[in-house]
Length: 289
Image (cartoon, rainbow, N blue to C red; front, side, top):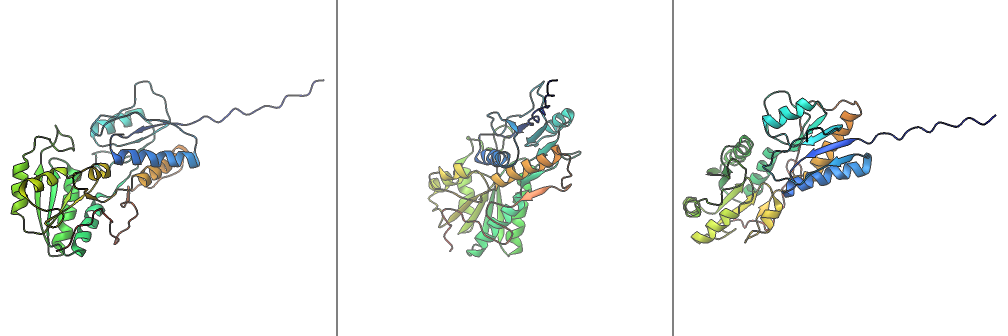
């Protein structure tokens, strides 16, 4: 009588995970790097990622069958699209969307503003400004946090709002450099400025009006390290912890896929290498008066 053949268990099914995050920014690429790091260390997911710009609408393709999603859920339409698919989702955007929330791991923009203010205050600055793109609640939150921090310390904060590309978070190239320069000239000196992103337009306006950077105008950006580094004058920046956000978001999704509970409250990650009370280390450092 032939020996019974032992049954070989089928291989466990590999999870399929979509990553709906832009690849055009330094922030987005570091998010993805963090996700990939978690996958290599802990799971064997198949990741589905496509090249995309910051303002592109990222959605799951029709007919795509997967197990979970890590996404920048920044509009009600994207949120509704993902809810309709019924998959576990972890949100890596700080934007607040009306309705039920997905589990969230995101950048702490208010802490970025507080750290920037403390950095400048520690170096003797008492006059401040915020360069703000129009029409974004998330930008308004960071602007308010920056103004509150400097005003609580006895400083003053002026605000200059810039038009953007058709509702995008990038500055319109047709902005009036002369008008921006006039605003900069009107501020008491030395002045310390925080921008939502980039800040090259401020450099151009300073060059046009003869203002020295950083002796008269010290500039720091809240995001996009690459654009800061390629400016005519390298711009200081507070580095968001993109890799850690991606890593923690992947850990949250892994827990959801295993049926575990995840925190109901959003998790906000402080800037890279920093914690409340520490200082960012921008490059180059503004020169105190």
